[in-house]
Image 1 (cartoon, rainbow, N blue to C red):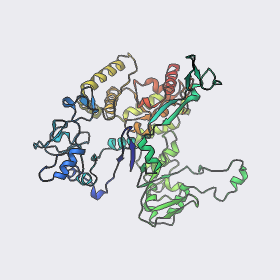
Image 2: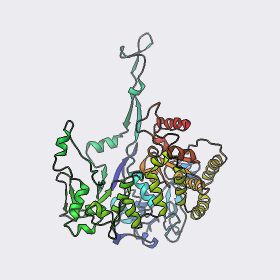
Image 3: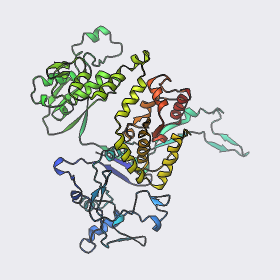
Image 4: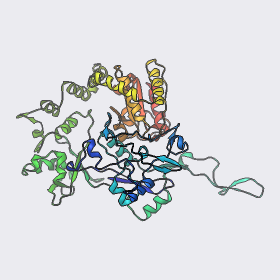
Length: 531
């Protein structure tokens, strides 16, 4: 998949993610060298390739050689150049590749500075020779990097705030008068404020000529499911209830069509629900699955359900484990026993341990338990803490502390001191992408959790929240309304489980905060003060 992005003054460039076939993957460090290189080629033996690398794939110079370079931040390169000289490619503790950069005496002179292998941007020889362009190729094999790439690919267009003001002209008497004499003296600022996209000249041309902006080769098919008798029903405005109930298609849904497909089809019964789109195509109009006739491929994605919706949540877990279900009872059947609930079936299959079983039961009945004055919050907190391996987390926390830069360590000490000495406060950390903000969040989270305390990781977007341990969107975590104004309040009361959990938290991290309107923060601030 790819997306085309436009710089304010530059030409379009693409961010591309490629998944390799299992037969063509490069799982070891030695095999990475077959695909990616970060060294200067031999000028005498390969002059054409040498010229391409010197023109397109050398970073900088920066640092002391060029302190005004755009990549410089507070005296150092934000892209961490120059890299270290290493003789063999390896994988570091975090799962990132350290490419081979031998000290072989080769260099490329730029602005009277000799750039050696430490300044080479990783490239692929075939692509560089074919396109004669800057093409940075990276080996990616860790979840964090994949999530970051998806976040970057789907981040959307730049936004610009525009205020429309009446144009003024100067009269012969030298007074400023409005062109429109009927313009009222009072301004409606809300009406005059617009959210608009910034479109550069290059992007405008690209869109006028209808060139592609996004591309995804493998289709992702959303797969719906529901509990028995709870399938969605669609009707036109004004249609009577009797007409709706008399429909022949009332019981038809994608999920029920799955049962009908599995009953006669032996091949379909070998597949999980999420694997069905790889062999069959869903006809939404006729409401049935038919077999693929071409070699095209698709990925199925089963709709997400939160843990608080007990039956549907555990039904989804079962659908990821049971092949070829033919009925609702079939899904709940384990070793010939038809269980009463999907949760019990999950437990019988070993998909839930005792702690998760208790946690899901508490969450699904929290409104009942709360009315009976049972301390649900304490149970939830205790259960959450059981999932944290304190020994491993303490060991990782020590390793991560040693990896912090001097500036990061200063911020870490100040925040942790404020948390555990009950000083309170609000901290705003700003930095460009790749400067280690998410890593600092991870270290701070570990510091709080190894002490047995509660901390909440939130983000402004769903993709960003995935990069944080236990992350949730701010809307989900605090119950912030989608549309907010000067008097909005979060949908959480002081006595609710969510309200008490927020009160128990020692630290709240909100990633990508500047993406949100000020009203979101004011809404949360009012709600916290009310609590």
